[in-house]
Length: 499
Image (cartoon, rainbow, N blue to C red):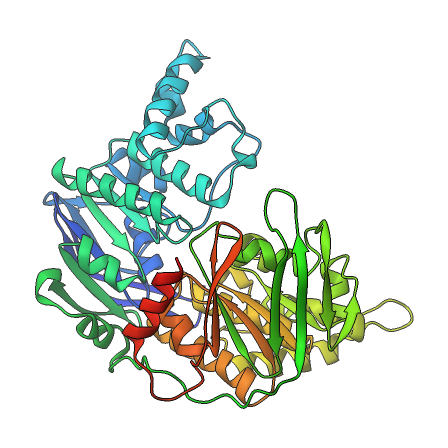
């Protein structure tokens, strides 16, 4: 077993972990849960030697464990699949998979590439990837890179594998395949430490769940004896609020209209309207066309035919810059880490990047004082938890990164917002806050919002109407959600009938 005793970790001004003790056993799937910022990632980095604890000890099978580096952890049969995509883009898939163990494939200074590719191919097939290990990894999708990282961890034959949000960027098919792999690891007497915000996933898959709250250990429970509300209460200290948020005062004014939008191989004559103050939900499986439609509307991709009207006037949107600066139309991407944020840059710069044109004087210099004022106002408005506005946004928790991703478009004063998967990879507390934020943008500020989500309860909670997508077509519409009283089961059944 792997025992953590009285682990304490302090960063400048922050006690990230305070006297945490947890035991993980071989042959079990043990979930680690908590809100963003609760200390889960810090604890995993201590286990794998990336961080060192100020106080406390770790024991592996009864022996004191001192991982001073990630390589030490690998040597002690501990490996991790990080939520962050950590690959070397210009290297091959095979090289990335054996990166931590390349010396094992050397003889007299010569690398046995044939053996490397054979090993890599075996584990690529295991995770369901039909790609060659000789391809460069930089050309893969985010989901394929994540599966490659999982293949890397599996190929090390670790006895303890830590998985940080492993299904967050995967399709349902890929996620189902991964779950079968995790179950097989349990049968092989491997301990899987499974970090996830998906409570239902944890309850079905895991044997135990341990919860951190504000850097402290909140408790461990057997999954067979616990309810969703029990887990939520351990995480946030109260019951979860998950009900429809009420009426929206929408008008009959069309702020955005799409007519006959077509793109070869994808869409054929799509029609859609968005009204002032409305939250319009787009539901469908991954790859059904929701995100692809959004990118055509904002000019990130080119349509073959069709018309777009904003405020009743026909427009020609040729780029994301066009959509923002000419038409006040913003797009909050589902992939905040690679498309939405500059992780190495500050919170302030990420929030103000959309308004630099307004802050620049005739000498093309940004008014730094004004930028600081506006950035601080936005941090307070969307309640970003950050040591300062100069903190690199990559250092923030996933929920706070998502707030910054939303905040930069709010700073630009967009009238229409397309929000793509707003709560993927965030905890229930941050999820509730983001829901409230989206609702208030429509209710109190009159913003018009297209909400793309694979989370059906989320869409039903927030939307006035829902369009259902399948294979790049709108195959159904569910109306009448602008009421306080509704039956979730009935709405989900209507959506299911469209699918």
